[in-house]
Amino acid sequence: MAYTSQTSHRAALLVASVAVLGLLAACGEGSGVRSGPQQVTDTTAPATGGVPTAADTAADGTTAQSPTPTPADEPSSLPASDDAASTGATPAAGGTRCHTSELSASVGRNNPGAGQENFPVVLTNESARTCTVRGYPGAAFVNASGGRLGPDPTRSSGTPTTVTLKPGRSAWAGLTFSNPEISGARTATPAALLITPPDERDQLKVAWTAGAVPVSGTASAVLLTVLAPGSGA
Image (cartoon, rainbow, N blue to C red; front, side):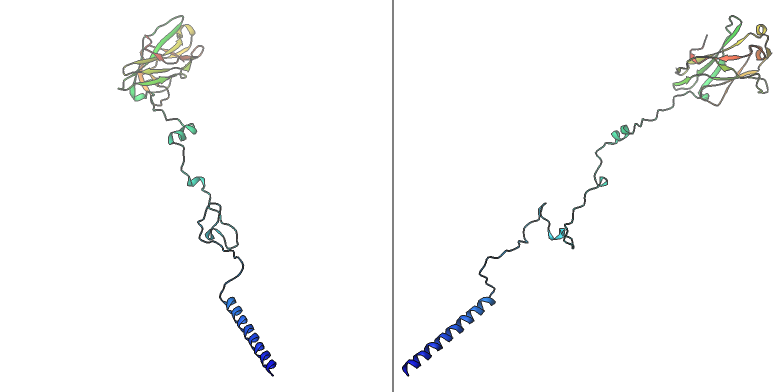
């Protein structure tokens, strides 16, 4: 009887110990304590150039790229003066040509020679500025009514040069034709000579007092030379 009582007491103690151990194990699982090491993701680290942040990650898991500046976003490094040079643009030159309104015209004395009649047609700068003439003037003989007599004078061979006329200075062109009494050309006596400065449209009218000029037939051509400095005297 004594043995049976002692055995029962030991069995009761063993059952109680197992129950206590089970209760301790259940409490350990509910406390969140784990026996193994854990990996922790650090979300507080600052973003760097090589580490994308949450804001840089698209919804599909791809990494968003920062927009690349376009040429329009960047200031030009070329100065304005270099821009003009790169296009080959040159500044527009101011006009220096003598205009008809700034000139007067005259016909100088005849200088005949070898059957030729040679008259200097003179343009004089009457303005207060310096201007230029270049090339050939235009010319035409007219009667008292303004009608043209014969063909207009033609240009003789020559190399045009720019003649600079200060106020009061002159340039001249030679008006040449064969003497009608020698050439036998038909003639007319002009009332005036109309002179057009180079590159102008308006004309200057000069009274013609040198007699008959050839207007048709053999050797009736009248020639004009290029303008040169001076009055041709």
